[in-house]
Image: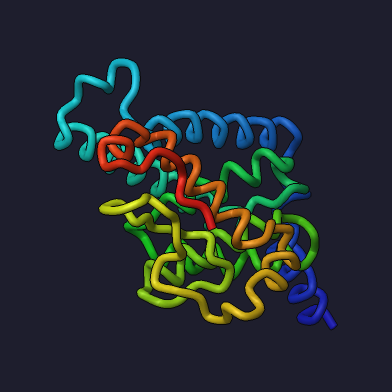
Length: 217
């Protein structure tokens, strides 16, 4: 009887990380994730501000340093608490943790572990399903496999700049139905949005090629 009680208590402790965190610790964790994302977003986009003067080599080193440093920290957070769901760090905090994992491409095994943990939280409505879809596809692409949702794109950079799903889709006939289940827009709308953003960011280059507007589906 004592053994059963101990095992029950141990299982409860393993699955109740969110409730074991004090409000102050939850706030501190949310703030830490938010600060990491600020730096992450500098590295994720084109060079701006003081980084404009960086050579490509300097910029690549900076980005690599940011992503590697962040991965080490979020790996510790993941070991301590599992996937930080909405109940632990709020919607923004959970989104921030996911984004940092999404950019940890040099650590595919870590991404896969987080994906499995995140799936359980999505089923409990404790994590965003659209974020899960993006990470699922990221893991697939990093493994050289086809995507389920088509969230990871490449562009026809040498011609029109149109976006298309990297590697391809597992089930192209039903992709919109699958995307809808995870709160995503149609694939056509998504690819058109990505095409428009890519075109605007590289407008001068494409206009020099004679491409005067985004090549939409």
